[in-house]
Image (tube, rainbow, N blue to C red):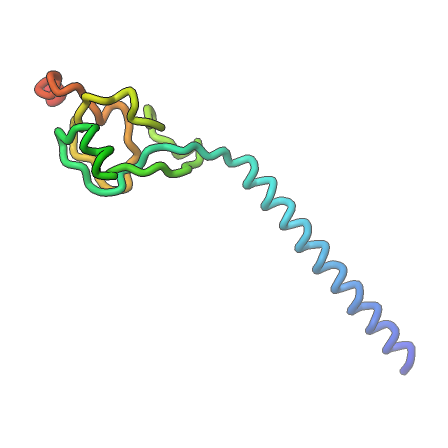
Length: 116
């Protein structure tokens, strides 16, 4: 009887050690995966932006926010700042949650050409 109790206690101790080891291993893997996912701060529409809205109005209204997006999910030409686009307007309506790309902004004098 005494031998069975000793074996049971040893089995329980080994099980606890195994659980702790697995949890530690999973935590390490999760941390390394999160480090590998590089995120970039990009501009996202915080609300629907009508076509032909000026960049100055977009900035003043707080219509864009920055958000960290994993690099593999970035749209081509996504912007990180609107500084170089002062004087531009939205070429098309931009929906809430969309990434702001260079192709969605145009100079006002080119607005008629955008739809050709």
